[in-house]
Image (cartoon, rainbow over all chains, first blue to last red; front, side):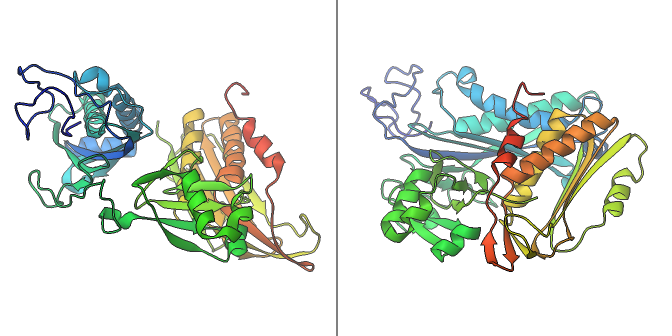
Length: 279
Length: 157
C-alpha cells in the first residue's frame, strides 16, 4: 500500500506519504483505477529467547502445547484481519498466506517468515508484516510464563512483487532499506526479475505421451492462471491438446496441488501429471 | 503435545521392526503403534506383473506426505508418525510403503494410519508403471481410492 496514488487530490508530498491528503488529513488511497496484478510480499521477524525456552519449544515440552503450530495459525489468522487493525489499509482477498517458524538454536531465536499473495489493486506487505508480528506476539504469549526476557526484533519486509513499483527485494546483508532490484512490472520483459518465465514439468504417463520432461514457458503478463498456462502450452504445441485436456489431469504450482484458477507468477514451478497411484 | 513426524522417500528396503523400535525408543508414554505395510502384488489390472517402477515428484512428494501426516496429527492425539515410501524398480513381494502411527490408545492410531494411507493414495505424487508379460503400462487411478479418501470429509467420523 505504498504505491503512489492516482487520487484527484493534489498530493503535498509527490514523493512522500500516500495516506495524507492535501490538507494533511489521513485518507485511504483510491485504488479503483489501479490495474489488478498479482501481488506478493514476504516479511520476517525474530523472537530471541533463553536457550532453555527454545529447547522447550522445539522438544514440545511446553505446558501450553505446540507453540510453533499455534503461532503459525495465529499469523495466518492475523493476515486476514490486517484491514481491521491498520486504519487506512484496504481489505484484501488474500489468495495465499504462509507463515513459517524456524528455530535457530545457534542464535537462541526463532525466525518467522510470512508470505502473502493476491491478485488485486494494492500491495500485501502490510498483511505479511501483520502475520509475522502476530506470530511473534503469540510466541511471546505462549512462552512468557517461562521467559519474560524474550525480545521481538527485526520485523521487516524482505520482498515485494507486482504492482506499479514492480519487484523489490531487501539486500541480504543490508542494515536498512537498500533496494537491490527494482523492475517496473508494466515493462515486464524477459530481463525482469525471474526472467518472465515459468518452469513447466510433466510426470509419468503424461511425460511419456508428450515426450517432454520440462520446458521454460514465457509469460506475456506478470501473472496468469494455471488455465492460462495450459492454454499457452496448447498454443505452442497444438498436438498436446488431447493429453492436456484430460479431465482427470492434476496440476501443481510450486509443488502444491492447485486448481485451474490458481495464480502463476514469473519464476514459479508448474507441473501437470496424471492421477497419482502410489501406496 | 507435539507429534514426531518422519517422512522418507527412498529406493532402499525398509525394516519394519527398526521403525517400530525407533518410535518407542526412550519413551514409555506410547500405548499403541499401528503399522501398515503395502507389498507389490503379482497381479493387478493385468496378470503376471513382473516388476513395478515407481516415479515421484521429488520435493513435492515429501511435502505432500508431511502435510498429510500433519493433518492426521491435528485430527487425532498422535505421538509419532513415520511414513516410508519406496521408489524405483520393485518386484512382486517387495515392501513398497510403510505407515507407522503411535498413540496412547489404539483407536487414534488405527484411524490415523488409515487416514494417512487413504490420502497418500490420492494426494501424494507417486506413479506406478507395471511391467507385465503383456508389456509395460501406467497404472490408472482407482475410483475406490478416491471414495476411501472422501469418507474422511467433515461429518463422516
